[in-house]
Image 1: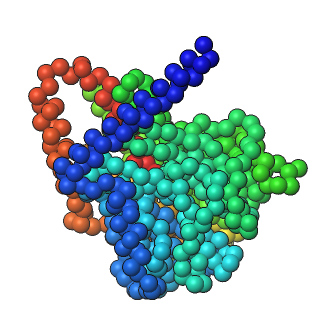
Image 2: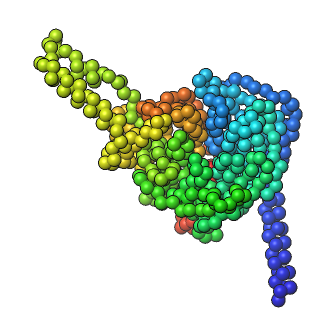
Image 3: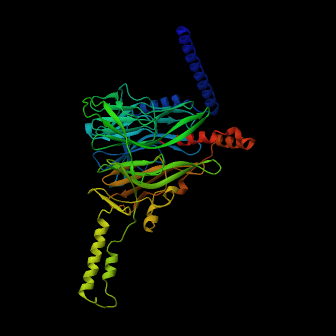
Length: 538
């Protein structure tokens, strides 16, 4: 029986292998018929073209083009932001990038650095910057998509860009994470920690919840030995390092099979701490701990951006959640609200941008003499001064009655309070509702780049859906977190610059749908669309 079972197992393996080869060959024939190259050949071509470059070049350039799923990283030692990679889809074709930009805030200028021998174009990768070795930018993983989005390639390569030499180095360390995108990565002391992600080869998909650490001194990968109940496998979560050495994981997205050709998308809202074992000297033993969240939590969503600021706090912006309408069609609800997360507690507060105030005008008006008349007596004038002083103190004190809270750690000052009504629509302006002030907010979006540098929050690009159109953005904003008065527009959104072309495949699908007589046969289609739509959430 044992031998028969063994032979049977090998036979099943061979059958699966033959089936996969047939599917691959069929796909290649279909691509050849469309005039599209095999994805491995495309990547090899990029590598060969890059080999032809021999010199490092630096050039002041216009801002990066429209894109999503890139990385925007704060320089560890300079007043700069580092922008790498990303993708752009215009409805007909997908474009991937591997360009590297340095944005200097004071001069508002973009420097493009072209260095030979770097990573191939990719999106949904991860990046961290560290000060050691003269300053380094580390890149891991990501994905490459063919122009028609019919082929996907996931990377498992690790790269470092050295700031002092302006050169890329590919790290050949073995034993690292498998090929993936949509994962998360942070630097903790002398290690880079990688968690989660997914891999999709168009025939099957897999989500991960494993944890790996790369030692920045020994240049070695280790799979961490993590005790406790782990988060379920997911991608597109947020991963934040704390000052005490712990790491916080929040949210994310995954899919699961509900029937043969139907998937169900799951938006996660749970939170975990990944804590190092205090008694372990190797740095390889950690523990998962489920976290109970306090405060006014954001509504369920994925594809949001989260940036860490000082005092173990972080700011969340945007995201999307798929709702089912009356006709059981999926509709993405996009958000542009902000939330503050106190990482240590952890506690959520909605954040309101107040609008710029003209300080002192009201005081001057109240103290101004009317038609040359003097104040009735000195006491009235003193009462006015005392009243104004009390009002000023009330504005700056911490009130814990649920109406208003001022959180001030000396660097990061933020006005927070209960969630304003209507924020769940994703298109409401929290500032407008809270204070009846017409406050500008960046439009809703997902997969944007967001980072904090010296108390200023920067938000770049991303994607927004308008019906069936997926519009990619390249607008750019900043917000002073010490004041929270107004968003500064660095690059405005230009609606005239948006483009969307209906692909031939979409037209064919519409024709097929018109010819269908029995919609019940496509019962599982909505559930499958939920997964496909959110696969773009990185």
